[in-house]
Length: 425
View 1 (spheres, one colour):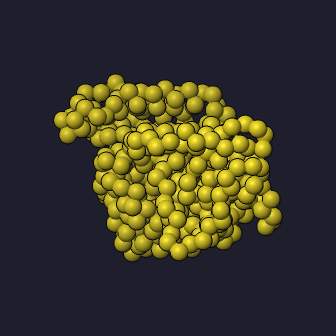
View 2 (cartoon, rainbow, N blue to C red):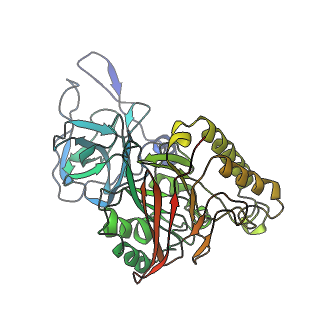
View 3 (tube, helix red, strand yellow):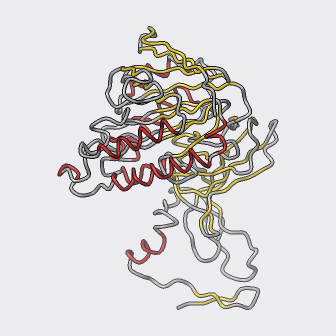
């Protein structure tokens, strides 16, 4: 192997040729295949030795944002910004209050800055109910040589803003859609019904896809039209995963595009008087069904989820003290089809858990058509609203009541109802 001397006197050795598969194994967890420097682009020279602080090579090319940015499932003290670039890049988010972008957040793993085209950067230590301005920045990376890697020039996005969730607010306002199933036209129509609303967040109760097949599909058939239609880099999205979102060759990569701080598809958030419980109802047939070819273990997954729900209902401060507990999930109620038909005891356990937790309202989808189950109709102490495929539920909450208006794609009202606050023990 060839070697050269650094100013510290340490001898560094150049890489020797190794099989391509070995290189891929070494870098795949951290760095994707890097793009070549475009033809005709000038780059500064790479140092050949001497001072380790000599400038690394920089090429006169910048990355372009191809998707996003957007926010998914933020909290009252954190937010994750997600976007994509055309070139593998290292990135950061500049953010702050009142236009002062004087703080920075990075995407890192084990002390190393991540390099890729999909970027998730989490901002931590935020203040509840605070408006933050932010800008995403990206610098292309053309090689990750052991010394003086070659990069491009940095780019900066326009400045956007978002507001963290605030449990102290006296109101909350959100909309809920479901089962868009890759129809951009359907999404565009529904977004027209809410784009002028001052929403705190938007919920999709599952089945954004028929099956998750590719990164392009995730953006083109779902995220991009929702971002363009209503979110606009500012309003957060919250997904309650549906059964179709667990199917297909890209389903196991899907979580990267809807980052959740808890790293699972069930969690809770607090917005004003609402304690929002996001549940994952999994598949709609037993794990043993041949159509799944033995690739599902949702019985175990839902058992873990139920145990979490029961613990959270007891130990979660806001789960007990918030004026309202609203559950959003894909498959409605606990009837046959949501869990294996033989699992009557499991369904009864979920019903018991949600009643004991003092749930005030469930919003779901899955059936592609509207239905409303009033409190008490099936042993439930709360109403269940199923949002149809071409409908949107507009929800306004105060400390005294939940007001829900369900409208169709034509803007006509389908159902309106209120849920008054309950006396808590």
